[in-house]
Image (cartoon, rainbow, N blue to C red; front, side, top):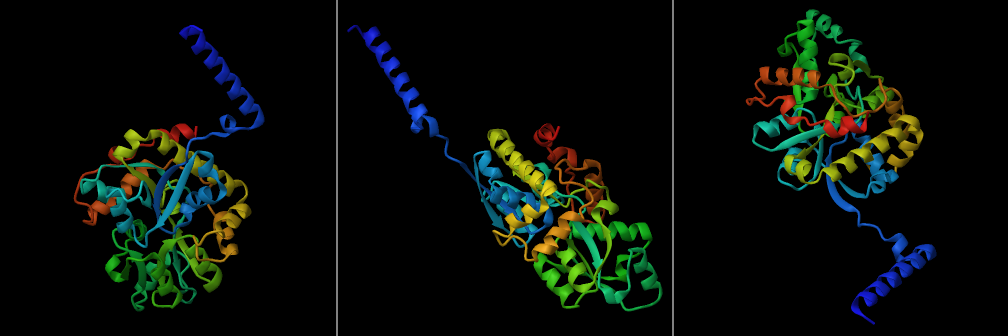
Length: 337
């Protein structure tokens, strides 16, 4: 047999074999690419629920991702891990990418983490405070300084300074107690060591349910309905060289958001598979149901820039990085159309 005829026969034979294997459910029918392994750093806020639900529900697997979640107790360590390449994706307060950019880290923010109105300022029931304006009256009455638990140079501090500026309150008339551990802040409030807690759902929700705490304001009302608490960031290199991985990751988050928005009970059930939130299921469900709007991922850049300007005015940011420089929302806006 001539070489050309032999090659043709071999091709026909291989095609026939592939067809038989496909019909019989053999390797030709089931072969798939190995899942792409990525690491995602996170804290413990409610708007990180899409990350956890995407992992537990199979949303990430649906887009051929094998995501390892990596917990950080404070935002700075999360930032450092991304800068050093220890993780591929970082979910962190939206101020942290600005710190990174001004330190020379080639960072890009690709979306909000997922969830609005997540930041809340709550007061102990015993204070009698029900609004931020009540703080001004409390100070005018000459009462002892209110102790307020927060994170320094973080959105949790800036929500306070913005509200104080609106009301004409000098922050020095209160006592900001700075923490570097989100869970330690909650314990301080639970123990009665501070009167006010600037924190995040579901932990503020638990204080409302278990201690009768009062919500004084939220980031949705202080800034805008779609000002985020946290955002998802990657290094420039990841966005440039692995755009398909970035897209798959965001698709996984959108898939998870659909579960939370449409079936919050199912989302809570999925979240109990891991030790993501140290609150009872009923508190977690209440946190989802009290959200001011369904989960989506395109943030309000103008509001973010205004908050960063506050950060600069307080002296926490020395550089000139702007939201327009470090936010690349091209992929998420295309996916959310």
